Length: 114
Image (tube, rainbow, N blue to C red; front, side, top):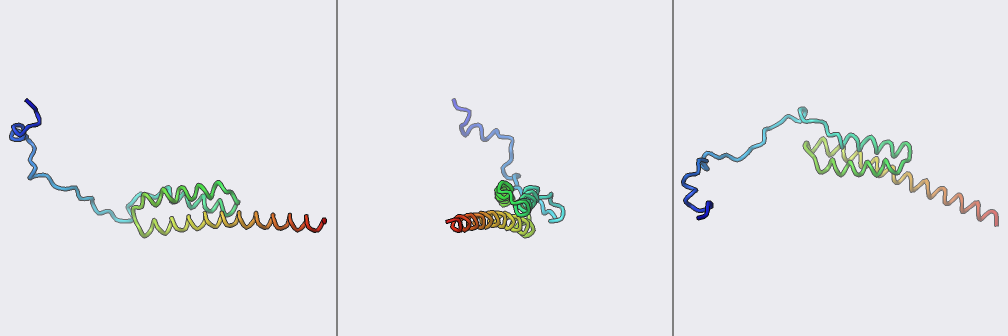
């Protein structure tokens, strides 16, 4: 005697014909909550460029990825995330260029001593 048989389906009080699929309500884009991860990504990206902190640039990229996974308003959020990503990339390129300049000056001073 199994309780999962067809005999129980006749006594089921639920009405499958009354079930309706869930439809998300339409929300105005101005009423959406703020994308904090996108905002934090912009802040860390600017800090990475201005202060040349590699950690800030990495955190900006991490928060950009988090913001991309949670996009609500595609147009507005994508602009914010792309701006944060550009700041993070500029921070990394600034660091690489600075390291190359230091390396070249070190090598030229070493060559002049010979």
